[in-house]
Length: 169
Image (cartoon, rainbow, N blue to C red):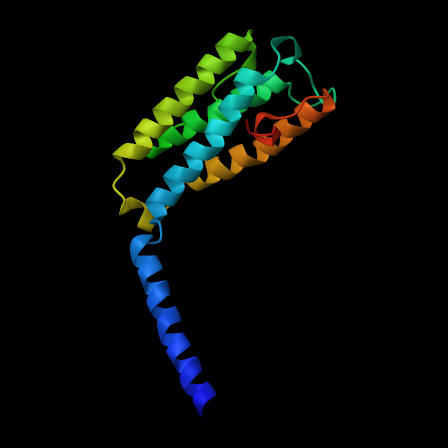
């Protein structure tokens, strides 16, 4: 009987501790989660775009694959798609042609602009809209995350360590 009481008292305290923790750190809303994941993956890709050596921007893992720079342009195209679709505009995914962005500086500037535009659209959407649909944001965020993994392979194939894998200082 004493062990039952002790267990009951522990359960009550555990419940109080859990409810206090939840009250102090409420679960993120769907809108906050979507915005947060979109920002996070794009921040990492932008860091890679800025960090990867310019003389390797045309590197391809295989001849039939996109170059590093073309992958970044493709990711930017996804962001442009999300921003326009999020505003209700008609848009195609690959509206951007990598041939129009010849230097690392042009590619980085394009990615930065696409991120800024998409984030601006995300901020204008009411939180309640994410209760109806998380598209195109989920699709584009997943797509970017897949290409982030591919970009890691470009780094490793060149004997480089991706920024997120480097020891923190």
